[in-house]
Length: 114
Image (tube, rainbow, N blue to C red; front, side, top):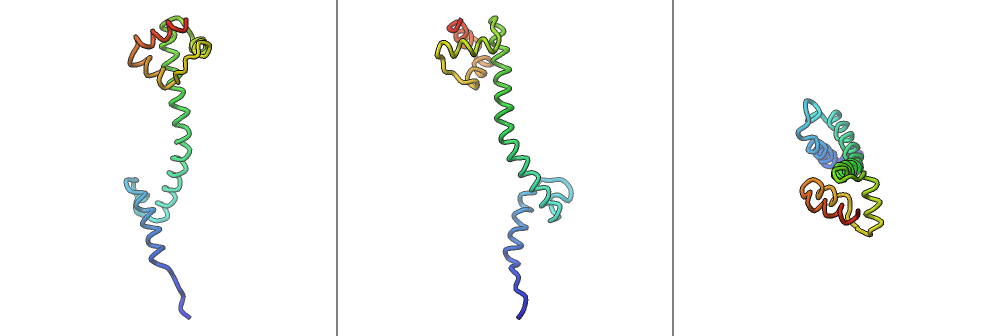
């Protein structure tokens, strides 16, 4: 009995990986073994960095809020503590945006908690 192979599925699998490697440099974009490794690694990085992105943005927001609060004589921790005590439920993303783009509104929030 002749050997049975499924070349259609094999080629489809390879085409999928090569398509994902589009834009890579050198042999990473068109050589199967190299492209497969490059795409696998890229997928690992993208999974990891979707988590890290949240971390990074939170740190950025905290930095911006801290800078805005210090202009009005409060540290970040004092400011956030007073927000909680006054039951003002603005998240860090909104506070950071106010501190950057709308200093008058941020000052109003600071005056409210002082």
